[in-house]
Length: 470
Image 1 (tube, rainbow, N blue to C red):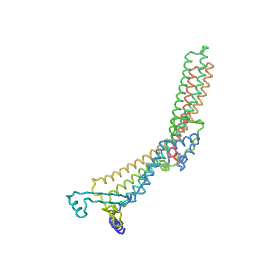
Image 2: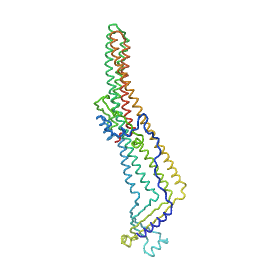
Image 3: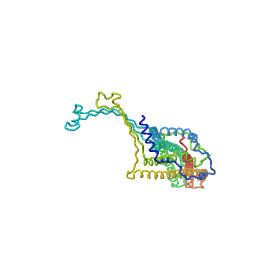
Image 4: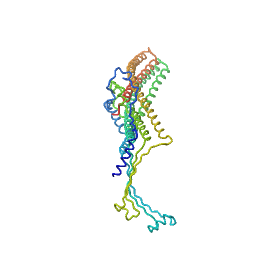
């Protein structure tokens, strides 16, 4: 043990004469962040993204769907398995600074030629024609972490684990938003189907009136044909909407990890509510909250650690190996203690000198990769700010569009009543009635679509700000 300490001390003194390499510090790159988001009046530290998804979405049916999605969605489950895998690697990385220890047992019998020097020597001195060797020993190998290489390797494992964790959060935000979008789209289709069915009743009434007027000679057969064509167009629309509803139900079922099935819903789109006080918060807070941006920053941190590893590979390495156990050339005295005991310790410093510029190339490539990841991180931040700005401007403009579409729909509904009264009184023709009904139908369908778009813009804003993973 004393000799081992002397060997270690000798190598420590030798390494002390080598200039130390400072550890690579991480400096967060300058980010293209504005003081506040575009289309916001003031900068506010509060944000809707701070709300848990159960607080943000208060519809019980939607909450149940999201809960199923978080539990059963296969993309999310795969991401969580990746987190578990990285966690196991992280546990293993904590033992990197410890020595490798192994145990081996070996037996060897060799019989040299009788005409060889070894064969004649064996016969002369031992009186036998073969030699035996039995060995049982522990082997130890350890590398001193002089330049922080092992520490950086441990840091890489930690960062890779955090990347998978942030990745799982990013997938959850996408799953939550996708379920909400699909649900609101389903409510829109329900509303449009209801509108189409109401319009079909009007078309049936118009057709019935037109047929009676044709029978009495007050209109032509063309009027009957046009009224019937309007009715058929509405029937076609109803069939298309029913098809789209079934497809959307299937998509939602798959999204929550279930076989395609009907989605129960008890409310209409007009009864849905999301937070109306839309507060985006600060761009800097969004960067720290969005999982995908955090994941990209972790990629940058990993590349910084990889530069440290590549740099450490260019400097001397102190390695100590030792083995010890029992050895004998006869099996019957193999484990005689202390006669069969043996041991050895070897320490050495190795310095790479010429490896066809491989180490230098690895170092330069690692630095370039870090620079690439700086650019990728900045791009991810820029994209995130753009997504928030898009959602904000969409929400503001859709407010105005919804108001105008609602006014248009009301006007055209009144127009149907006027057209029908005039038609019955003979002051309007069938084309005016059909046109009024068609325009009203299109306006109501458009109003339902705009309401769904506005709900979607709020969901997009919630996701873009980093909400949905809490």
